[in-house]
Image 1 (cartoon, one colour):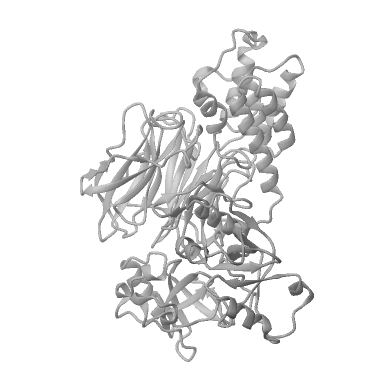
Image 2 (image 1 turned 30 degrees about the horizontal axis):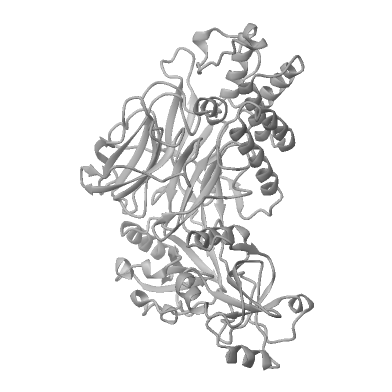
Length: 640
């Protein structure tokens, strides 16, 4: 199975040219070779050249031509199992889910378990296709006709890679450039060479800068083969280097997990410089590339790599891990998705990564999507080959991947309920007594905001059940718990979320704590809370949130300079260390649903803000941005 996955699904090449039938009429020495399957008992045994062509088309990610060729051959007789799987995979990548499903069903007669898995994956793809898009995405301005991939945010700008096919006669099949683009979000100034005072190692295809900025991890190819943007059939190894104050790399050293005969790739840092995640096809894994975690014990010694387990790793390939402190993102070609590689993320709860959740549209497409990295809790970059017929990769910017669970438009309403509100159920905080519930219900003017659209139902109990305290103890740290009274029962729900993906992440946490029957509901709720804030985006001092380490943080004042620095966004604001920006200006905060955005300022001019930005970046806030506030909205300042 591992061979099949690698050959027909895991290695569609993101080449920088379009392959045609004429291109394939070349000698064996002029084209890359892949592992070839043979079918001694098949009608295809006499058509090996034709099958080799299909393999090359599949290798070069020419899904439309693979489908055309295999459909033609299927008319003359039944396809061999591997060809059935290749046809189904490529139909799925083209978005033809119903047709792909038929071929996966055909493949079940050869391998029922795998075939049924992909049948189910087609059903999942159709469901994901019909969901609402949950983010805004845009290709970045420095994309070209070549392949761009492996984005990495740094204090100097966006670092990324470009792969170019070299001229005929060159010893290398491809050339790799490391580039740096200055600017913000999707719009950058023209890129420049990412240069060092010494020559960087050849064939680097991925880097990640540590949280402190003092170290860098990089992955390089160990041979002269081409790279498809995410994998190669040959060698890959990962290294670490120290970063000096002037930005130079020194003390380059291989990670101890590299080994002859295996590939170790996409090493990236966790929440500290001493925790890393990486992908490797170590033979002891679950299949293909698995994801691992390792911890630095001393400067030159690492712990034994820990496989992230069968929830994360599958029979296929899991690659490009990135942990933002709350969620692990990665790409998989086997977990149920829309086609090719899909991006998934797994929430961390009580030191465990939970079952991965598909990121959905528009992050994922029917083609390959991978290498997602966060800039903060709301924005970041990923790579996809969805837009290019010749399978070139492009980098995309996204915002609002983990949007606030509290809908921005919701406000406390003390006017008459609308018709839509009359259809909503009333949810009471689980801590309220029966007397408090009755007192609120008896108030003629008692009104509360609608909380829509999604929540997680945990249990249905009798009104006299004494489980409320236990539920609060076991789940209260995740989000607010509510009780909804019906005729003879009380329904217990957790949270109220605008986006289903947010509810899905929370559902996995709840199930991991033993509540396996929990499920997502879409019923609107009127949340009864006399102390509800009038605006979920209100600027307020953090002392009202009872965060000890930041209790003196104040809200920004409107009578000072208009420029501020957006330092970072936290789900748990007590992780913010104000001492890191001590003496640089007034620290304030902006509440956005469950997130706390920390700001520094005010500054009278952009120049003042620039100087402060350089200082806070040196102190660890590498993604600090200059912003203005328009009411409650953050507006990034263009630095032309």
